[in-house]
Image 1: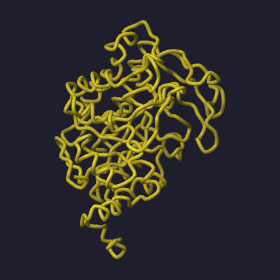
Image 2: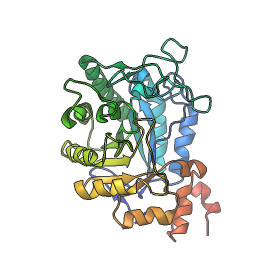
Image 3: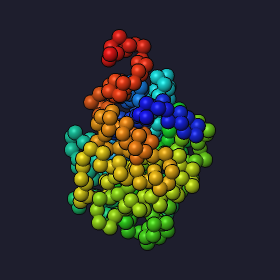
Image 4: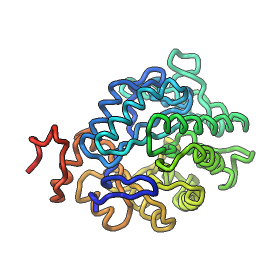
Length: 354
């Protein structure tokens, strides 16, 4: 099953192995460069069914760090067009994850420090969130977005999606997970608002639903709209699987085609029992309850494990991150592991594993 095609409404993915978005912290002023071309292109050469580009900020203050990719201005599109053209030439589907980091923004590159910069630091800026509560107690407090500023965020996502379409991405994924801005509205542990964007479930999902509606108007027949969510906060009183399932049903009604199910990230005191496949049950539940095409992530490290997830109908495909960093041509090895005769890129044919 891992090497069966995945037919979506308007595109077909050649297999069920998708490259998960992985931040590289290697851009300047949001611009992609040859690092991103080679990084993403290698996975397409290696026959990944789809390659989803890292969290790409819809505004400068939406970046996690000053090294993040961005898509807040038209000039960003040129290099992205080069990347998507190459990915398509290799038979893979190019995707992009549109993101806003909210209160978890304005940080250093992680291999330098995990610290957050103050707004007046050279590489820092004022962060924003659903409420003026910092992620860590020693972080600079974010600014609670006003209703007007929320509408600007919605517009930023819509404008970014339009640029993504121009750049040639076929999958547009909204990042609503891992404690970033949209998740900061979803989670009652972070969202303490008393207006139409806070309090009830209906109010807390409002920002995401408005973004979905705004982005839908920019997508054509050759595009697929995906959402990544954290199905659970792993903290008492937080966002949970019941709310995630209810949200997924609403997203399906709104025209979202695929849900990419992860967990965690909203609060630093989360308690996650990390083990192989630990997030699969959340994807499985949402898939069975909603019928949405569903992807699963999280310590999926072997072909047999990935194939079993799909054969058991826990998910329709798997998203792989760190295993691809260890072996960009992981798909070739997994095909051999499952006795699948996968055609290699002709330039690499002489190295084919027999």
